[in-house]
Image (cartoon, rainbow, N blue to C red; front, side, top):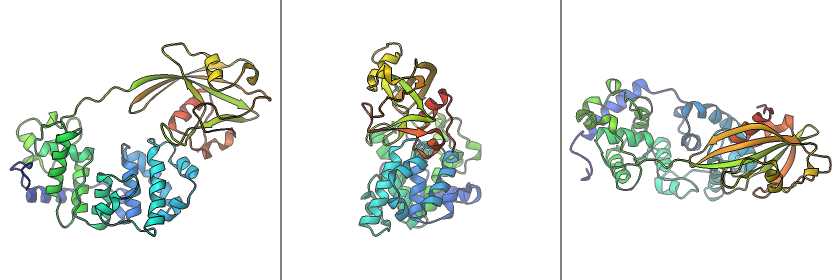
Length: 368
């Protein structure tokens, strides 16, 4: 055992307790019914920063449409983004598509079965590599996600800041020391399941925990203060003004660049408002390279949408109006394309939750 591992609890009693509990109490989740590395990888990417309840229907739809890594790789990126729409963190969808193409082109459609091999794939980090290697291939590979950080910091009373640096490195060393040679996939899933259902962030359910008697944090009475996490930076405020413009039963949508926020997705175009200026339709038209003659009548303020991302809090004034017959449809600054899309076809476009909120504010629903 490395020096970083405290003297207790010892690995074997802890493994026995957690695995017995997991065998009896684990949730029946669809990705637990397979050892297909593609399906497991897909679930792990979807579960990053997204709740299980949200992921389940997306996972089922993806596997129904793209049952193999080759079918995903062969699909147009627009179709993949459309299917991902609403799941958030859209960079994951683009990486998913790129990784599938790499597996198809460089590995004959077969996932590598080792951590090192998996780490060589586009967008696969140490956690995902450990998950796929252990669960799909039975490799003795550790993994660390938010649930595992919480469980191990409490059980081993790790009082370092575990958001990064030495504290997170210590958690990884503990995880690597605990992973068994046999049954690593079950062990890793037991750790994650404990963190998701019992060793929860607030008010851990210690009376239900199979490791309660072995938990050093509980023995010291500090379990609720762990893990130690450096304060998150508050999202920066950003004010924008958006245009929902219609013509002949169609609505104007613009496409985001591949790189950056909402990459490759479609939305009603918007521009940032400098400083603390009040929303002004003239600023909107200028930012979108439109003139007053491009709009049939005046723009109406439909309301404001607030959308919080990990690092930004978007406050968006939404204006609605009609495009004149003479208005040309072209990509505004900051976008790569623009189109008039029939209202009944909106559900077939890759729209973010943010885009749907903006459309809804202008009383346009999106059928799914």
